[in-house]
Image 1 (cartoon, rainbow, N blue to C red):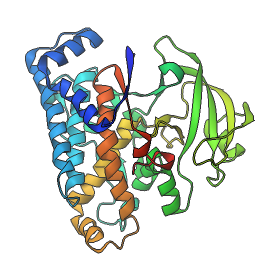
Image 2: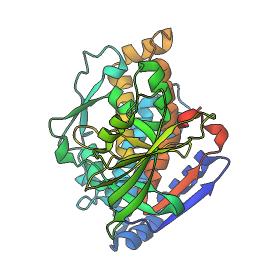
Image 3: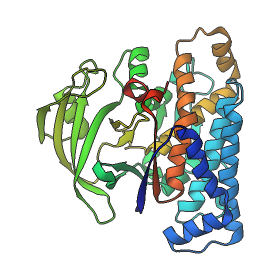
Image 4: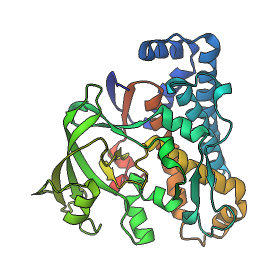
Length: 365
C-alpha cells in the first residue's frame, strides 16, 4: 500500500464532509477509475456495482442508526461496518473480487455468550474464515503520519496469528484513544494506549518502518514510568527528555527512544489529533479499522443476542458500564466511517475536528 496524497481538510461539519467523500464510491465509474489507477487492473461493470452496493448499504445502515433508538442502533452500526468491510475486501483483497467469494460468516464469535454478566466481560473468539479475517488480509498495516504528512506503515496481525486466541471487550476498550480517561475512571486502572509522538528514522521503499524514534508523554497518574515504557517498546536504548504536554496546563514527562525491527508498538490518532501508542495484544497489533470492527460487533451482538441485558441497562440505568457504552456508540458514529473512507482508496482524508468538539484525551463529547 502506498498513499499518493494526503488531504488535510478543516471543516465546521466534519461528519457531513466524510459522508460526502464516501458518496463518491457510490459511483460505478468513479470506483472503476480508482481501481484502475491504484491497482492497475480494470474491473467490469458487475464488479464495480458490487462495491457500490456495499458502500451504499453501509452508508444507509449508518444513517438509519443515527435516527434510531439506542435500543437497536448498535446493531445497525455493526451491519454498516460489515457492509463497509465487504467494500474494502472487494477493493483491496489480493484474491477476492466478487461478493459471492466473500465468506457469509462474521469471522468472529462470542465465546461466553450465555455466561457474561456485564459487557466488559464479553470475550471474542477468532475464526479462520469470515468477514473479519478477510478484512485483516485486505488491510495488513496501520497508516501513521509524522510532520508534513510523511506516511509510514506499521505491520499488524494476520489471521493465522489469531488461531486459538481471544480478547475481551474490556481489552478492546482499553485501546480506544478517545476513551483513555473514561476507562481509567471507570475501571480504576491504566488503559493500554498512551499519548505519544514518533519520528521515522529508517523505512523501506514502500514506506514500512524499520527504525523509529518514540516520544511518550507520560501522565503522572497513568502509572506509566520509565521501566514500563521501556517494556512497552522492548528496548533499552531510550533517552529521557523532560517535556510538557499541553492539556489543561498539566505537565508530563517525555521519553525519546530508537527501536529497530519488523514490528513496533502501533499508533492510533484520536479525534483530537493526538497520537497514541498502544500496548500490543499477545498475538500482535490490530489496525484501528479492525479494532472498530470488533467494537461494533460486540455492541451489535449484545443487542441481538442479549436484549435482556441491554434493555435492562437502558431502562434501569443501574449498570455503571452504561455511560461507557453510550460514549463508544458516539465514537463509532463519528470515527468509524472516517476509518473506512481512508481504506477505500490510497488517498488519506485527514478530516479535522474543531477543538470544541473534542475533550481531554480526545474523548468525543
